[in-house]
Length: 303
View 1: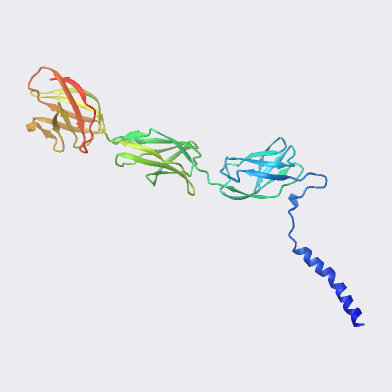
View 2 (view 1 turned 180 degrees about the vertical axis):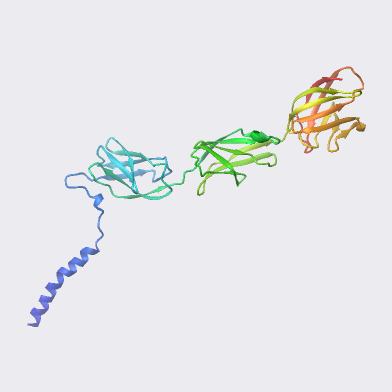
């Protein structure tokens, strides 16, 4: 009697145990199961496994059918099927960087199994600067530079020698900025997209070497006349050499206080010349800045 009662208890417990074990098994995604008679979608490769917005992704496999869409999370993306074995789509530009679930869904509702796919921050590409060289004394619009490339955004930051400066987003291919007042030489330009995606650096040259563009006759006085020297990058305290003789400098005088050099501005010097004869001759003139950078030598015919 006791034995029969024990067997009855065991038989009553068996269905409960079977049900509990079934509930613990992992469930397959319903979307990855094809209806009876429909081929399943099989994905063999995803190239690349991560991409920037605007990047192209190629998936190979089978069961794609003639019409299929790719999904990144909840975003449906039109896809193109080639030879029934390849699916190609473009990562939408509006998607933010991060980890997404990628899967394919056929027109009949059959979906592939999901895969992890990373959208990378959009990396800016800096291809040129226009101009890539400005004069140290440039002013206003002369100091405006256009950074050219691609993948720029309205939140892009322009870095000048590693520090962010004010810039203006023109288009995904151009950002304009004004060169700050800095010393001459080479300076590094980089475009940064949030959060930390940097372009390759490019060099901007700030030219400090003086250059003479023309020398013309100015006002005439009783015992001297003026030669107007025009050009660029003339610094306060510059001097000139006339046939090897230095005129001017930091004190602005030379040759017994007779020959004088007056600094007009960055592009103009006035040489007050006291000729000993009214006969014209050829003079060789060169401008030298206080840091000893020298212009080219120009020939001038004057008394």
